[in-house]
Length: 179
Image (cartoon, rainbow, N blue to C red; front, side):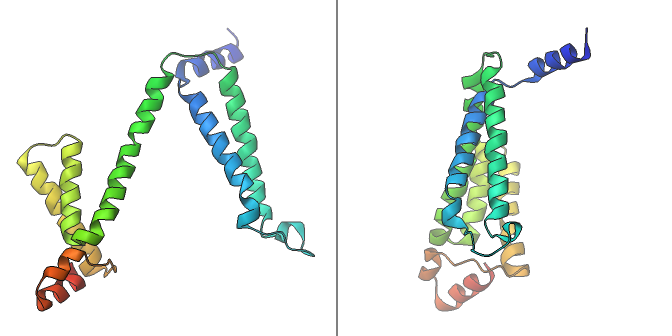
């Protein structure tokens, strides 16, 4: 068996069935980014080519489109493997965590950083399958520790929640400053 035949067999064995879908999505995204280059950067008159503000972004985006096209072409010409829909569905499941993050970002201005962080830590622990009280308490304590580290020790400025407005003046000032 030749070395090339061995490499082809290796490629076929480890080729993922969702590769064509990924190639199409990546090519479309690359073309979209390249189409937006005129709105995002400018070509300046009487400036050397490599000193142009748009030159290096254009080079990188043209490279993205070129290599995405090659990827799409190789995926389109490869033999079909059963399981493409299952793999794409598996990829899409990861988007759930982006939605969890967006929900967290939406809830923080209402509840505040201190209540929202442990709440979402516990909800995510439940989501991934932890049910033991010890694990849920650990998730809540980890959320509280995150708040203490970021808000109190690192003094990261996170806006207080609307919930804090209902607290008495002294407690509200304390919560806004440290939690």
